[in-house]
Amino acid sequence: MIAILVDAAKEEFDEARDHYEAQKVGLGDRFDEAVRVALERILETPDAFAIVNKTVRMVQVKRFPYGVYYRIDEEKQAILIGAIIHLHRHQRVWRARFRKKKEK
Image 1: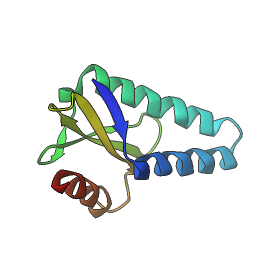
Image 2: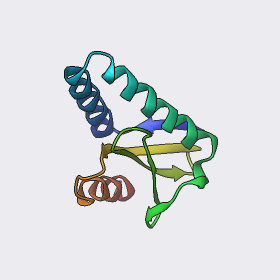
Image 3: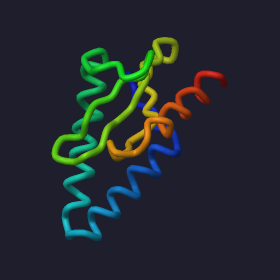
């Protein structure tokens, strides 16, 4: 399987990485690595993580208050990463993305 990040997830990741790097030099790199580890875990065992809404699953990024929200697309043999967001953001942010992708 491959991971496909939607543009909004890429932007969230970049913004968070820049934010952490601005807080402390090197912290952005640690965030980057933690997200990459989360993505590797998803690719290794995509069914292992909790379903948070119908077909959407989430894995928490270690040491950071972020979650990676994804859906398994069996047809495309891919993992659709819809959001990499702070866990305190409202759920409607990532839910809306998965609704839009499903309807297309």
